[in-house]
Length: 87
Image (tube, rainbow, N blue to C red):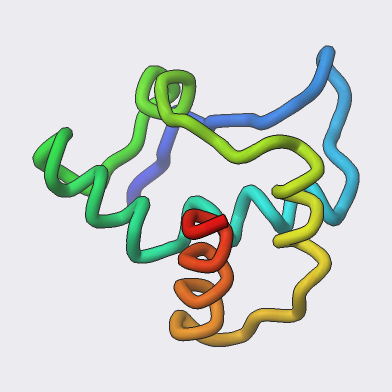
């Protein structure tokens, strides 16, 4: 049995995020582009709070837009993120 004592929490002013924003952040962080970035520059797939603070995120409205899309596959996630990066 193992227990993890570290938890990264996203918030705005100590309050929770709206559902679209939370989903958008999830889509962004689960994209192959971000995965490759972490593997290339940090050498591992474990993400700590400093990594999250230094990572560039799209605007809040763009993240909400990502979160409004019903994505169920990695292909869909990567397609949405590639469209975002190209814009």
